[in-house]
Amino acid sequence: MTNSKDPLGQDALLAEASRWFAALDAGTARPDEFEAWRTGNPAHAVAYARIVAKWEGIAGAPVAPAVPLRASRRQWLKVAAVGVPMAVLGSGFLAERAYAWDSAKTGIGETKRVALPDGSVAYLNTDSALSWRFGRHERTLRLDRGEMALDLRHGGAATLRANDASLPLAPGLFDVRIEDGHAELTLVDGAALHLPQTASGLTLRRNDSVILVEDGSPRLETRSTEQVASLMAWRMGEIVFLDESVAEAASEFNRHLTRKITVGDSELAREKIGGRFDLDRPDQFLQAVSLSLNARVVTNAAGYELIR
Image 1 (spheres, one colour):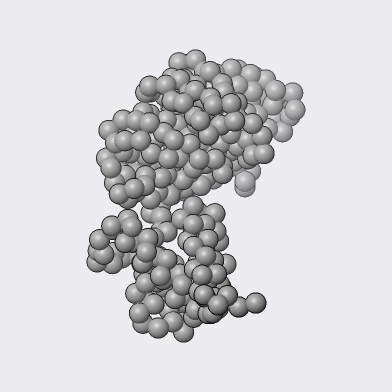
Image 2 (cartoon, rainbow, N blue to C red):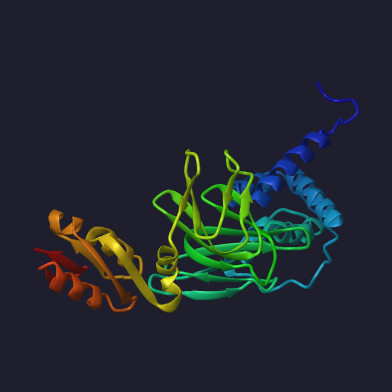
């Protein structure tokens, strides 16, 4: 039955547009699905433009000149404009601004320093991807893959998203890592941090790590100062192993290598090794294993194999 107070169904359209806006803002919606909805009906585009305009008015964000967009963003705007009135095209640009994230990434073996808008700094480790969105009412960072050292000591509080978790961060120095379906946040320097979002309300203190596992309860681990120093050694171009198995050490080194290290002997894989090595010198590690554990290094097209 048609609502006599809303014969055109505008309330329902605006409600649907609001849900899309909230999902895009939270980073939980797929842009391609949103585009299919918005371009599928001009009324959808108009409703979404009204929501964006309302948001801009509430946020008080000034309309700034358009900054250069990546090619994918230009293509996105071009597709968004098909069949949409010119007035809506302008609002489409506002929509892009409303949920756009800035981003940076590194390739295998590459590290990068990323200056954030508030004076904070993120250092990306090998094969990592970071997105962020800073505004008058929001300071959000999202680690999409890999690892970063996040220095908020000269900036301010922010929200971190990693592995579908959302954590409030106070000023401090953190290491954040995503690997094998879990995220790990370590407080390297700074005041104790209460995490009310976790089920048990964990408190993170210096040298503590909170492990966030998909579909599981977070757990807290306390590390030694030496362990935290080894965790951050990549910032100085080094990799440190503290009584790790050869298999674990090889796996860690492989994050930085295009030519991988494999361990072809199960007994050798369980042997323990320690030491400090240059990230760009896997030969140092291979030589250490060879000399200390009576192993042999076989070079092949894919990389290196350690065998007994």
